[in-house]
Structure formats: C-alpha cells, structure tokens
Image: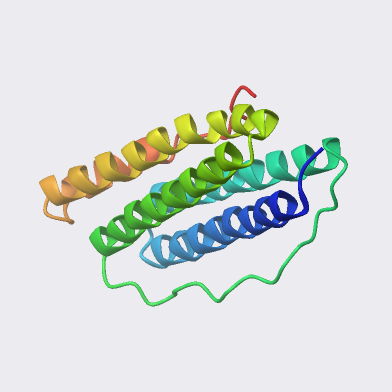
Length: 168
Ligand SMILES: [Fe+2]
C-alpha cells in the first residue's frame, strides 16, 4: 500500500520522466537539423529510455493499487546554439532529475515505505549512469572544440546506439 501523498509524488515523477523524453526529442531535432544523424539517434534512443523510466513508475503505482494520472508536459527548449550547449543542458537536466529521485527517496524513508525505497534504488543507480553518459559526451565535444573531424567521428559512434531495455 502506498500513501496518497506517495502516489501523488510518484505520479509527478512520471511527468518528469516523460518531460525528459520530450526534451531529448527536441535535442534530437536540433542535431538532425545540423545533419548530425548519430547525435540525433543518441537522443532518440535516450527518449526511449526515459519512456521506459516513466513506465516503470506506471507499473509500480498500479502494482501497489494506486491510480496513475498523466499530467500535461511543459514546452521544451527548441533554440539551441551548439552541440556543446545541448550536452551541457542535458547534463544539467540529469542532475535535476537525480535531485528529484533523491527527494523521492527521502520521502519514502520519512514515510518508512520500504517497498518504495527498494523500488527507487534502481533509479538512484541509473541516475549515476545517466549523468556520467551526458558528462562524458560533453567533455568529448569540448575536447574536439565542438566541430570538425572529431565531431564526425563521435557522430559515427553515436549512430550505433540502440535501445536495450535496462535489466529491471
Ligand atoms: Fe529518466
């Protein structure tokens, strides 16, 4: 059983996960507009990951007898200046999501909700990976100065990214 307040908080997190996907699709559109299909692919796959994150909350709420409520998404940013800006924003966004997940965990601890603490553990580990992926790409883009052959090499690498549902 989940408390009403917990159901509300988990539902809010579904919104953040779906918004993350929305934001990444917007970043994919920017990359595609610059003919960087590999970078676009990276964000398209990232959107699938975010959807997976959202649906994991969806199933958990249902499993615990709560009702899922889908809330409207905000307009994501669409006017990006550079690939470096895109990855800087993606990295900052993941840090924001990490804070949200940690707040959820704090609340589950406060409520002595052991099942939700156990469920959230997966997201805590996942966020370490998400932040690291974005930061590593940001640093590589900075390393090659955001343009030229280095970017084309990275673009080729990222074209290979595929979606594999993370082990639950
Ligand atoms: Fe996520």
